[in-house]
Length: 243
Figure 1: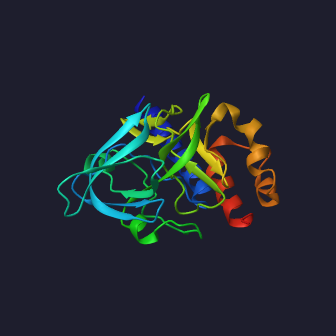
Figure 2: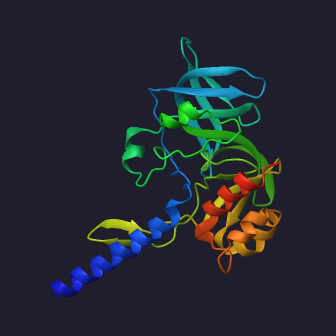
C-alpha cells in the first residue's frame, strides 16, 4: 500500500511539473484578491486627471463587484467616496492575510509591461491594479471597478477577475494543492467595448469574436481552443495583433 501511494504521489508530481512547464512559456493571470490593506498607501486616479493618495477605508461591493471605493486622502480629516463613473484606475495593496492565502502568485514574475497605462513600478511592488469599465451584468449594464488579471501582458484584450466565479476541481495530495482550481469565468474586454462575463462553457462559441482576427493566435491553437490556454491566447493576441 505504501509503495502504491508513493508511485501515485510521484505520478501527480510529474504530471503537475509537465503542466507547469507547458504554461511557463507564457505569463499567467495574477491571482484575484478580495481583502486589502487599510494602512498602506493606495493610489487612485480620477477620469478628470485628479490623483489621490491615501488609506483605503472600505470597498462597497454588490454581488462581489466593487461599486465604490472609500478612501481617506493623506493629510485629510474626512474620507471621500469614489464611484466607478469617476474612477479611472486604482492601485491597492493586498492585506497580509490575502497574500498568505494566495499560492502561485505571478506578481514576482513580470516579463513584460505593455504600452497600456499600467504602472510597472507599483505592480512590481505588489500593488494590484483596478480600473473602471462599463460592464454587462446579466441583462443590465453598469460601470463597476474590476481587478485586471493580465497587467504584465495587457493590450487590446483585458481580462478581469470574476469574484463570483466557480473553480474547477483541484488535484492534491496530503492536504497540498498541486494543480487545478482554475476559474470557470472571467470578465473580459476587447478594445473599447464593454466588459462581459466569459464563461468556460461559452468559450468555444466566443473564441472567434475575441481572437478570430489574429492569425498568430489561430496558428497557435493545438487542435482546438482550450479554456486553460486562455492566458496564452491573450498574450499572443496582445503581443502580435496590437493596433
